Length: 253
Image (cartoon, rainbow, N blue to C red; front, top):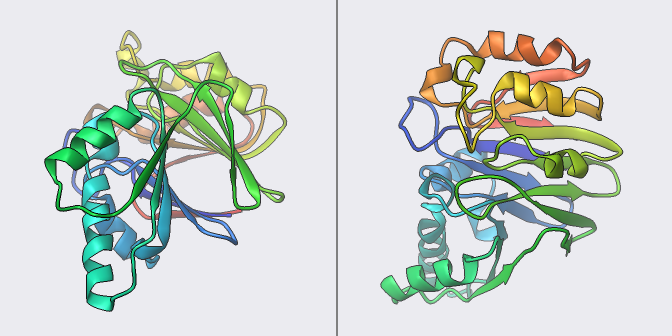
């Protein structure tokens, strides 16, 4: 499993940070998790072919997690027109409300002819993806939101999406986990913030789990200059590797 953090930012613009998006390459296919503003360009920069992305998993439907989705569809459609090769169906997965959300977007841009199939996921669902399984747990955010565990025969990734620290993410980290990509939006001076996670809260959630590596993403500008201190807070109780994500960061498992 090869992982590229395409975008590690938030809805507030930051230099060198696109919004949320993660690309996972398995031996069988490319899988996209979230698709915020700037992600289509980051896919091109990554060296992977956006025409080969036919599965998109959304954690929730805030703009910084889905606003480049239609841009991806349009790019695939235009490229197919130039090559006379029919574009493949896009399979979309997401929390409750995904069907209505995608349908309304496609109604607004009815010149988009890419076939889109939507599957709404619930807490506890498991989806076969190639030679692996994507497991789903509900999380705590301001809109319906879910976290994902992607497990192949050789590696395991857990991606939190946007959430307060929740037992559901802890449950997804059962057994051995190669990497947990977890939002850590604010430093602990903003500990009263809701719908997001701070370092001490994340540390206390996962300190005793069998996770090899934690990658902190979705950092607001409020965390700028405090990244090392945030990592140190987590390492007070967590013995594994802790990194701060950056755009186009690669993780090979």
